Amino acid sequence: MKMKNKLLVISALSLLMAPAAFGQNVGVGLNTPATKLHVLQTANNTGIRAQITGTAGNGLNIIPSNAANASSSIFIPNASAGIGMNLNMNNAASTATGIQVTQAGTGTGQSIFHNNSGAGQFINLSVAGNAFSGQQINHPGTGAGSWVVHSGSGSAYQVERTGSGIGVLVDQQGTGFGSLNIMSANNISHINDISTAGGTGSYTWGGGGVNADGFIFINVDNTTTPTTGGDGFAFDGVVNTQTNGGGIVSGGVIAGTQWGVGHGGIITHNGTAGRGFEVNMNNATNTEPNFFGVNNGQGSAFVGQNQNNIIAGTISVADFAYTGTDIADHVGVEGASTPAAGWGVGVLGTGNFYGVFSQGNFGATGTKTFIIDHPEDPENKMLKHFSIESNEVLNMYRGMVELDANGQATVELPSYFEDININASYQLTAVGTPQQPYVLQEIQGNQFVVAGAPNTKVSWTVYADRNDPYMQENPSESQAEVAKTGERQGKYLNPELYGQPASAGMFYNENVENGATPTSAPTPNGVGQYQTPANSSGQKVTTAETEEPVID
Image (cartoon, rainbow, N blue to C red; front, side, top):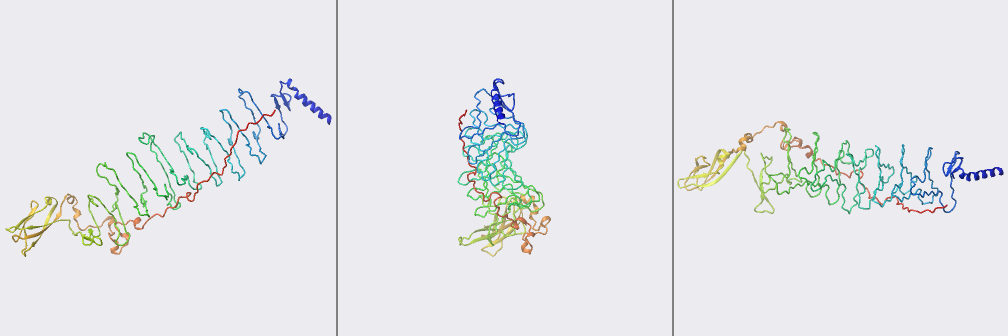
């Protein structure tokens, strides 16, 4: 047995001395080595093993020293089904890096070329309590910390998070952008798909104490005088649901909750044309209002002002109109105020010309009055005077004349009297004498003659049918009795006075009469008790470049 061992040693020495015969190549397991050291392993064990038992020293040190050498320092053409390179860090107490690449040149620190199916890079951190990052990149330069160039149809970057932590966290401490998407084609920049589990598509935490914008959209090349931009929408939402979603009836395109002293919404329109805000309700059977505002504070539910001082013509600050063709008494503007019996003003108008003006007929089911502070007790009383009702459309004129020595006087009427009146009637009352005066000559040339006791006074009143161009074009407006037809038939102006329900009213509005008010909209799902994220649980790892000694 000893003889065989000696023969093996002699054979090995002979092999090591063979480089002179084979161009200084050394072969292990073969007689014709093709490289300086050529190992042919056919057994089921390791081809080369370097076991280091000392307190220092490299397991393998490869030094290509020729700067012109463009070949690889280590080249592994792996034709097997195993792993190309497998590093096991078996010292559990070690804090050293598994693989460290120190690049002093301008090339890539690490390149992976994958020519088949499978992950380009796979990192598996299997310890649940591991608080370190799966991948950390410390980059102080101006280049990209991570850059993915993906020309296929898959995801350029994909994160599948099954735990309760954060899927992607960007901790931006500098002045740059936390995240920037540059679209080079007409496509969608960002998509949040929450169709499976619901939740919040996007959440921005301002934190309080800072001036912050949740979303900014700019679609012009010049904010002062734009020349391009297209039909851009700062927000474009589509909602089509069937069930109640968290208190907001079947969802909403926009839902917000404002607690501070700021405004719930602000739109500033600086263009020379275009509407400040537009809402279109396109379903003909929808009975809900276009706008609904509930103010539980002490301000107005709606306030509108126009402050333009160079307006051409006349504008309406609030312009409401029904422009359909339905045969019914639809109401352009309806105002109601019913705090308590005897209190409340439905419509209040203030104007330097007219506080309220009706372009057309004016009607009221109640009295028509003027009301002022009582002249005898203005602090405690009001004085009301009522309009005289008539079944005719009349104009009234009155005055006082003094008869001359012949017992006659000419009453001068306004110069426009005969232009707007017909069918005049007279009422005369003597003053200071029992002798009754009479009309000596009827109205001609906007005047008439009164006769009676000489040197006495006469109080006169003239009533006439109104006959201005409006009445000439609308003679039916003078009819006192009007038949109820169409939608009016069977309806009442004041149904309660005839023991009828409110729904029998001619101007009954189901939404208003039923007091339809939305419930207090809750905070949208996913926005409730969110807390500002604390420092990330992923601890930062600091690595230092090491200069390892060469051991010959």
